[in-house]
Structure formats: structure tokens, C-alpha cells
Amino acid sequence: ADGYFYMYATESTRNVPIMKSKDLVEWTYCNTAFTNKTRPRFEPKAGIWAPDINYINGKYVLYYAMSVWGGEQTCGIGVATADSPQGPFTDHGKMFRSNEIGVQNSIDPSLLQYEGRNYLVWGSFRGIYVIQLTADGLSIMPGAKKKRIAGTAFEAVYIHKHGDYYYLFVSFDYCCKGLKSNYKVMVGRSKAVTGPYLDKDGKAMDKGGGSLVIQGNKDYAGVGHNAAYHLDGKDYFISHAYSLAEEGAPKLIIREMTWTPDGWPIVNF
Image 1 (cartoon, one colour):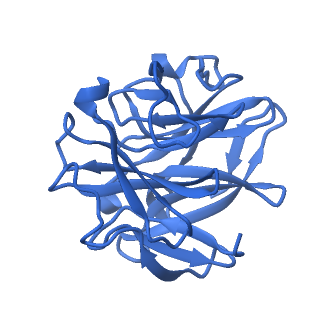
Image 2 (tube, helix red, strand yellow):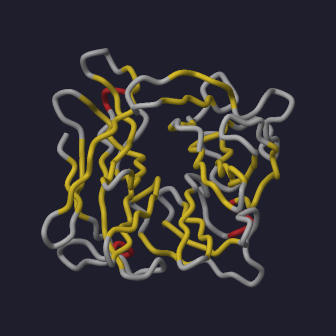
């Protein structure tokens, strides 16, 4: 609403840094989502990973994962809200842990709004799942049941609507090994948010399917954990990567995403 684009990052030494930009090229640091005093604590020694920002009923709603490497049963997903995209954010605590919802390695949340309802999608190499949330997006809808929509080879899910289909983007292979990373993005599609999601060959993503969208090249390694947005009549593909020219410096990659005549995404990279 203020004319800026905002980006929220997995924390390194700060409490979820927030950057803003007018043109998606030049970015300015403006705040952190949390402070040492207000940061989430449901996993005391954990980092805050993979924030996903949304606007729901007049609030900026931030989903996040809390995890330590290897903590696949105690990690989980929480939620915070703010009146401004720059914060300050008020933490509402965990929505669930892995061992509470029955999904090992419950990280990498993202929100999908579908037919007036809110859905959370999440997962990391233990299956990709979806579940309905309440109207304010702050908790699981009473009585809602989770559903697995993709297999155990994937993480970092993001669902994007285009035409008659919902496109399930997922990341595959190794994400966080610097220039040794071979992360890539795969896709399948469905006419319903709960699937089944099929790749170009008609193979279900819950049965090992997935068509390649983008992977590393001579300039970047580890291209993955993407999002997709529709802005001013165009679709954009956004992900992270490591720059070969800058000895593995992490980068934000933004490219226009076009579509084949039969409705599959193309990212020229």
C-alpha cells in the first residue's frame, strides 16, 4: 500500500531482516521483524527460517519455521502479525510442532488463499502437506485434516495460481552447501489445491513426479526455495542462489516467468 516491495529473510545474526525496494533491484534494509526481546521462543536454541508474509483481514501475517539442524521432531511453524509491513511484529507463538501434527521436519511454511479460505502448505523431505487455517490465518481450522500432496524428495513448497490450474513449485536436492549446492525447482499442477498434482508426463508428485523449472548454471549454484507473484499483468519467479562470480555470495534472483501454450512455466535464466 505504501508503494514498496518488501522482502523477509531467514535470519543469520538478526531477528528476520526486512528489506524494501521500489523497483525490485535496489534494496534497503529497514528493520527486523523481531527484537531479542520479542523473538519467538518455542524452540529456544533455534533459528527463524523461511518467513512467508501475507496480508489477511487488515494485518500483515508472517509465518515462520523454528528449527535447529537435525531437530526434525521438535521444529515447528509459528505465526506473527503487524499493522505495518515494517513491523513491529507481535508473535502469536507456534501453530504446531512436527511431533504434534505428525509431520516430521515441519518447516518451510507458505500460505495459499483458495475460494475464500486460507491454507497452509509446508514440509521438507518428509512429504509436502496442506491444511486449512482459520479466517484470520492464526491457527488450524478446528477439525481440519492435513493432506499430503507431494512426496519425500521435496521441500520449500509454494503454490501459484495461473489460469485454471494451481502450480505446486518445490525444491529438490541440496540447498545450503554454497557453490556445491545443486538445488533446483520442480513443478506439477492441479485444478484443486488439495491435488492431485501431476507433472508434464502425468506422473503424480506424491509418487515421485515433478518437471524441472530451473537449476544452476555457469553464473549461479543452488537455485531454489522460490516464490511466484503476479504483478502488473506479469508473473515473476523469485528464489535464492549462490553467485559463482562472487565466490558463493548469496543472491536474490528475480526473473519474469512466462508460460508455454499448454500452460507450463518457463523461467529464462
